[in-house]
Length: 360
Picture 1: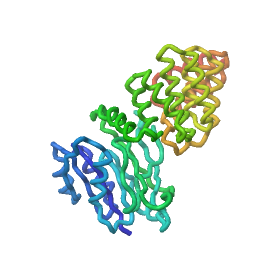
Picture 2 (picture 1 turned 135 degrees about the vertical axis):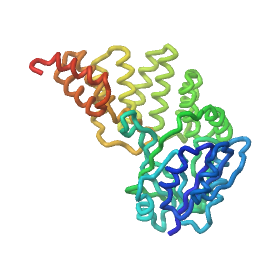
Picture 3 (picture 1 turned 90 degrees about the horizontal axis):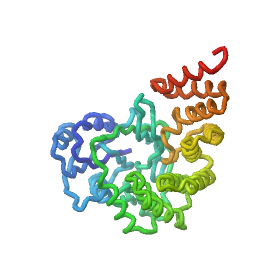
């Protein structure tokens, strides 16, 4: 079996050695450099990577990724697309080979997008950037996806034992994302995924009216049927409405988000935080405990790291204390601290809870 890695890059010299080492289980590594001014190209070539250079103007991620995919030999059994600020844990190739059957065109694998300050995992979901050589092209100027161009639908499989970690370069700007998302929506106005991402991007920029309007457009689309993403749109609208001074509308949208995807912790905890800001402690306790009933972490990309850390326990502990349920506050406080043992605030909270429990 022939497996090749391909990537795009620009000014990634600080990641080159780690990335190449983790990709070395492949039969070859191909990189399209899009304008590095540091030693990225020189370092890659010295480590045996095949490098080509191209200026992409106007810039589009799909154009760059397709050019890098074109560098991969046509006899490849599996193509693996990664970025230089990512790295596989050892053994990924054998795990991928075990999962790739003749009828499978695309593999999904576990991906840790972010890490918490204490080193624990933050944002985790499953990616699908391993694919067969033919019948795939990248689509969309940003938040690009692999589009299957063959007959029917690409068959996928989950892999066991493949773990890709992402250590982001926080010095790089994401200013290009908003105009590229606006372009993506103008090019594909019926694409519900792009509409959702655009509304989310407006939220990041605190453009609350644009955020709410765009995400309501997303929810109205006939193709917007995935409950996880719909629920996320609803809670982002709730955040926008709260910032626009409409708390009643915000409350309604939070409750809609919970009803849309009750299998996710995120809407329950977003609603709990909303009621926390209003001092409605019975609501906070109910909502945080409802989130904690979800014990299996979903594979969805909308599964956020803080929902699986100390947050739900912390909210439950604070609410319980305000309601005079000191034993419950102490129990949840201990679980919150266990999830984030270096957090000074949680340490202080535990001392406070202990002081309010008789005999503690």
